[in-house]
Amino acid sequence: MIKKIKLQNFRIFDDLIVDTSASLIIISGKNATGKTSLLEAIYIASTSKSHRTNMLNTAIKNNCDFAVVEIDFIKKLKVVIYKEGKSCFINNSEVNKISDYIGNLHVVMSSPFDLSLIQGSKAVRRHFLDLELSLLDKEYLRQSSMYKRLLKERNEILKASSIDFKYLDVITKQMVQCLLYIYKARVKFLNDLNEILVDITSSMKIENIRLDYIKTYEDDIYSSFENKKKVDLANKVTTIGTHRDDFDIYINDLKANVYASEGQCRMICIVIKLALKEYIKNISKVEPILLLDDVFAALDQKRIVELTKYVLKSQQAFITTTSILEIPDELLKQALIIRMDNKKENRDGKQQ
Image (cartoon, rainbow, N blue to C red; front, side):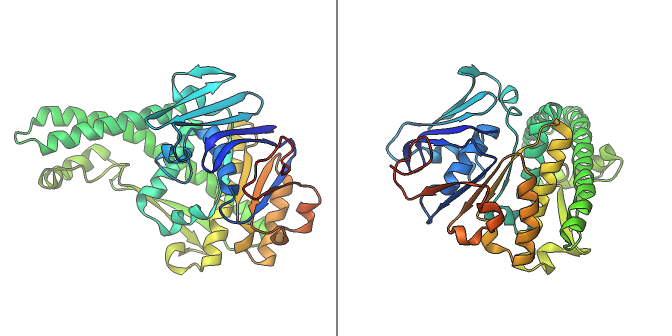
């Protein structure tokens, strides 16, 4: 359980200390009062990344040189964000390798940004796969990093005026080894999520949801690269590989990006994150903290009732809302409510 959040020069906050020693925390306030920023801070403390942007330094408050996110959990986790980088700390000791930092605090974030899983580009879905697998599997992180280095090197060879075909073949074979690990891990991850999705959609009495991996190569991966060599040379870029793969999201066997309504799309994204939460719990044996950013406003009453059941099962959950009237009474009765209005807050989360 997260007991306390401390922020310095982060987004709109100069200094903020919030006591979160409760299993359910509802953060209420108008837009631009920092509700989402609190959840973002927790996410950064977990992953060292933001769910909102790839430019982490944009979280630094205007006219400041750095920002600090600190979370009191089982351990004290801290991320210091600079304009040119970041530093991560566990119990006030700096961690040199990000791979040693991530995995200490597991969270699952559901937010309006998740719609890009359905409506966004292939790159968004690949990022989802890579991020979640890297947080749980250090070998996946290692293989993925190596694959990116080899891909860059292969593309440089393809762009050269004089091609060294022997060296190209060596790099390609090394890429294939990395690709095989990445591909198998991704497919297993989606298959595991699909099994969990069957249980969740059945329990919530909603449409069936399925995730299908789309690869850009045949089972004989090396032969696929050989068959694409002329195309790659003509385009001066590697045209197949896990960096080009994707996955489709289906609702009742229909592609969600084509047939799902906006309400269905939002529910699909929420349910995928609930499945992810169960997956992380199964793998890490630790239940992740659930972060729900403005999700109730977009749901009908039936789906709100079903989602409420899952929230109540969580060890700790944070929910943001512009109006507590959107939150079911069943949750309000058990929640620590923090009201945000751009004023500084004290340790109890109440306005000064």
